[in-house]
Image (cartoon, rainbow, N blue to C red; front, side, top):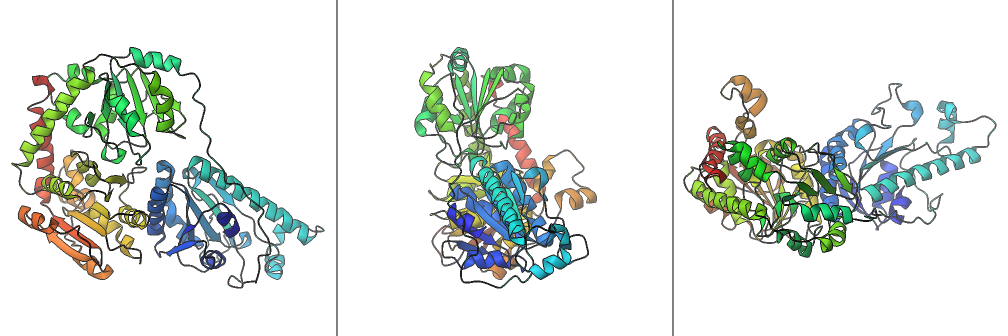
Length: 581
């Protein structure tokens, strides 16, 4: 296994301590080719590895011992599965004859990730190690009359083929894969040279689908008066500026992006909900939604945050939905998606040279709406009290150029969509499963391989849930964490329900009085706090300056005001909506 990883250039290994995985730990850590990280909490370790894979865009290994340790990888495995992160999960296991007999730290590890894994390779036990033990307890593994050497060669051949299949998926589909390896004791003995020398392996390469004749699609595109481009999660550089310029300068093309799209252009709309929410409240809703409905929807990237754009496009479906992605095309809008299996740049370089600009007021009229809501947003922010929304505006405004921003899920990523952020920063968020469970760990792992400072913006439940993300020795001194503490799951307050009941506060909002100060003292972070407008302005001064240790700023906002201020914002926008044009 170690030789295979080395041959394929997989050098980053996140190890959670254990005993059953000792042979692998020894193999990886004693070879200078590998860079190894030790993180005790397996759930945190796997998200840490996701952060590294996110930045490197190449496979990263997580390695654990047997038993329930492996199950703690599952949240990150699911995130990697839906976010296309090449996570290589390697687990040590007990021999098959010790499963389900009451042996300690033993569960059924084969195929444990089932439908959320690209490939599961369950290797066979080495028969020549601990021969006496195997012959005594593992008689079912041996065939009478067949020389042990011959059976061992069959085991080696099977294992090699299974590892090869897993690596094929890992490299060509960017999906997580799981390789489960049984080990019999003794686990710590070593030899001076490997008993099996791995043959030369060629790295699997992803092949893009030939786009073929695009003339029929070009005809449709060039006839359409309303084309909408919607971009979800996308890393920097996946769509070159020249192609973005081509799309943005066509008056019949309207481009919606999100902070996680990592695209910026003056003719784009980065705050989708600020367009749609006022229409929902308009007296001319049907007419305005009809004006916004695209004939063709072209989508790039991964999953989209905005629930409002999903609801709109499911009700006002495009005639055509084309999605550009190397491996996946979800029919998110129930419009029979056409999948172009290539990168955004490959599609654009083949398609856009044949595009003709179409005279239309589609882009222009909605950019006018955007400009009005930007003006109204500034007006609204000037009159509201200290709150989540006011704090987000000041925080995003203060971000230095060149930093990486990691957003936690739930209210954090949704508030971020209301503002024009990411013009000078790279923005990331775990949107595969949209869980709060690994935001800190992902940010810490991503920071390891990002050359500039990293800023994590997180909520209180996300932060405290993933507090073990700080329990490692890899926190860079230029890491900055901004914690918006509204003392519970504030996002639930904007949902219909009995917000003032004890059950709501206990089982939905999860009210608490925790502060991050003690956690900072425990893990060696410098701590700042703010609970008023003036305190936040003061705390942000110098917060991003270089220091010898990481810093955390805890922003304590009023939970009883936040939801009303957010909901009133959309009412405020609708008072100057498109219906007045």
